[in-house]
Amino acid sequence: MSHIVQIQTEVRDPLAVRSACDRLKLPQPTQGEFKLFSAKAVGLGVELPGWRYPVVCDTASGQIHFDNYGGRWGEQSRLDAFLQRYALEKASIEARRKGHTVVEQPLEDGSIKLTVQIGGAA
Amino acid sequence: MSIEIIVSPNGESRVETKGFAGSSCREASQFIESALGKRVGEELTPEFHQQTASQHVQQWDR
Image 1 (cartoon, rainbow over the protein chains, first blue to last red):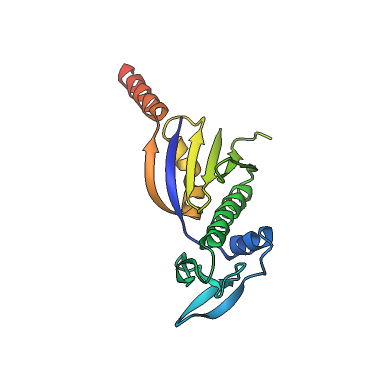
Image 2 (tube, each protein chain N blue to C red):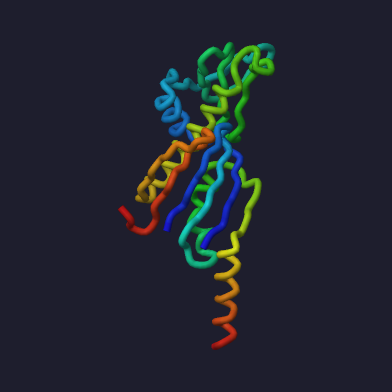
């Protein structure tokens, strides 16, 4: 039996942020206060390739702060890829924490499917 | 029984449960859903309703 839920990602887990950076071969994130052009943000700063300012993850609120000037100071696709990887790492961490096995499979449209086996299946 | 999570290229997730009995699928995937972020929509599949309906029938039979 089945149901389907749509979820908007909130970045709340520093461990999953670090894991996403590892998988994407990004520098390890650092905690602190970061300048975003004229604004400032506090949180876990992630350096994306080609981005002028870091993406700052406020893991207390789940919000991310960035200023890529509509794509001129950093490609949106880099941020999207980070958020996709974060969601995959977070789901995998939670599933493994409960003892479930996880299988990852890329799909043709660029999505990635994670299958979590429940109930003792190997 | 399994939970399928499809993460789109922009980081949005779609969580689908498969093979659970009745509404237990909701409890089974709750830990993943709350970990990922904010729920923005839910769709109950025909199988969910069929199972719920058959459970009601069984209760009436007793």
